[in-house]
Image (cartoon, rainbow, N blue to C red):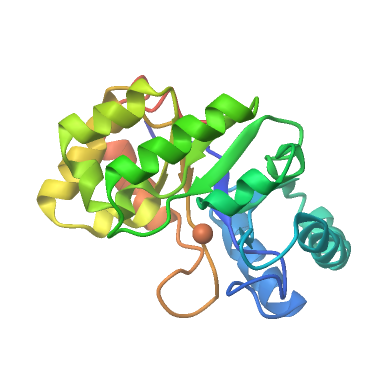
Length: 229
Ligand SMILES: [Fe+2]
């Protein structure tokens, strides 16, 4: 396979929302970089911390940030959906519904497990609780960040809850064991979303796609990549 098109499902492109893009100019540089690397659609997923900010306030900040970014997204012909990266903490249960935090036009809720040092038991309980209260589909953000996801048995417990999985592309920079493990999860059909999780134009989380896509297409068949949106 020469070319593999996927949605960048996890980005911090909205300006001045979180620790991502600091200005419209920086957002534009990131969008241009993604576009030049063949990304045609992005999900705009700023961090949402329910223990720090009311949903309404977050949404009105997001609306304002999006108002500034929309002309640029349109200029680059970048398809997009608004969303959020929702921190997994019991404070989210203060809300009667989580619809406005889902990826626009879908019932996908991008959920960030609280900490790589957290226990899988805590996260599993929280996911079960979300599923018991809300009609959403949980997408677990950057599963590559949690060492417990490397353990097949633990991973299966999450998969058995019916969650969707998102990998950050830079999992391909991880050690051989971790890299092979996550490639295997893709092959087995457990991963539906890939993302850059890009925050800035410099530093660790830049809009880097091509370097990773070229590796993916040599390591996986088009069929194995077939579950990715
Ligand atoms: Fe993120």
